[in-house]
Image (cartoon, rainbow, N blue to C red):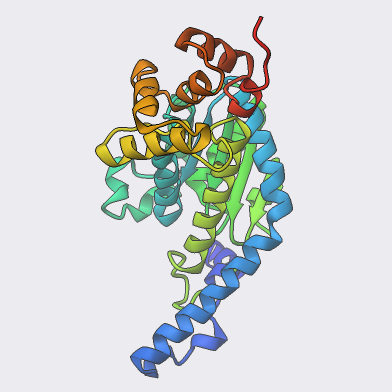
Length: 304
């Protein structure tokens, strides 16, 4: 009864008066109604821009200081965390030694629902502690309800240990907001299908995670202009993209861009600096080190 009472108070568990008769509509009516409800997501996320900014600054500082960021969630929220963390490696060259995601129920839960796992606070604490995090690290808890026991147990311990703590939820007055340093609460309202937080809540969480992680990557120098210069060129398409980036930024010929990339073992940043500064790889890497990996700054540092 206590849990039922808690759920009744959650916006994400409420019944949407606009969709009560959705089962009687035509296919066009159903699709149109779902799309119109999705339009509310952007407004909810925009309202949270100040909290996203605050979280991005804190988390960028964590990575600059050599710390790690750990995402934790269950169900859809957990899967979105895993997706965001996994895509940082090919896009920005950031692996799980910097950003990692855990989902309640483990890897199996990515493909097969393990719904009871979200209620296991002991497992959440155990999984969190197994990562060996310290006060220089950060924990980002993801939960549509903002009360998932698996995540809450870890968030509470992280707070006690002095980690930076961030909550991402879709309820305004949540347990997250009473624990985390920053709580991003995109209140999207009741779902089209009651309680199906894979829909508007999931879309909002995906938008927030994309915005948050991309902002962090830009701030720590993983982007030059609007190019993903720490991308890993692991296939033919990405090799071609790397060559195009170097040519566009430097004005070099395709042959010169390829030569620089090959000399730099396809370190795009280094290739840009080698051509732009007419220097060898060793000097380019030194400039990048001095600039803490930020290409724009490396291009301005005078030679000694």
